[in-house]
Image 1 (tube, rainbow, N blue to C red):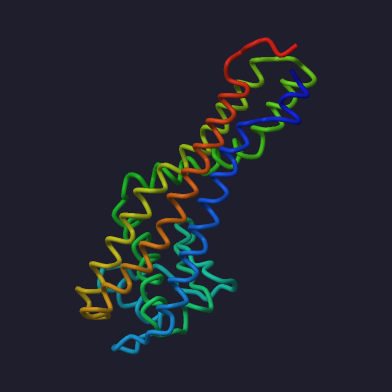
Image 2 (cartoon, rainbow, N blue to C red):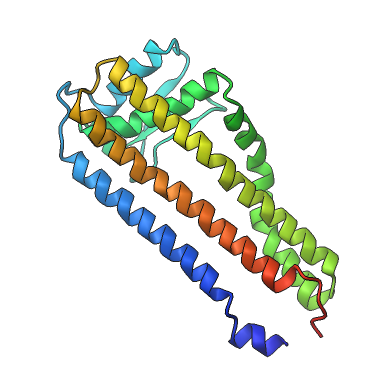
Length: 234
């Protein structure tokens, strides 16, 4: 049985599909962001300025805005109430930069309004991180050394927590983008066609989360096919 799984494992196609989806989504968001990074907004506001206006117009004054290094490394830190914008967003006045900044503001607004999916995702973070890090070691120990279906099942269960985190991330990200687009229009930061262009940027970014969730589900499916049946592996 072992040579079969080692040398010929047809379930590898599931991993391959997940990798292709993730690479395609990543390429799409990079190309879309690059395209609209060349479109300067009519307002001329930078990502940081747009973020400040959105936050203040939403009654949020206790969130700091900071610059962070990296490409599209933008994120909102709810623990410290810090909105971190990358170099390509913080000081840039493009439609793409403003859209990304607004999206992160969407997370800050979610936090301020105690948006339930965001709270669930936050609670899952430590479990998901732990599950992702120990799932495979547990499965391998149960498979090779202990011959324990219990350890294998425990590993699969822990990996399922990481998949659950990916799934709950989807409504959180979609909702943040909807809030972002609405606030950009309401505050007059972007106008008309600019709103449509920003929506394209945020839709492309959302694909990365969809692809990530799909890849995780496919990986979990592979684990269930290989090890979840409790069949004899001798």
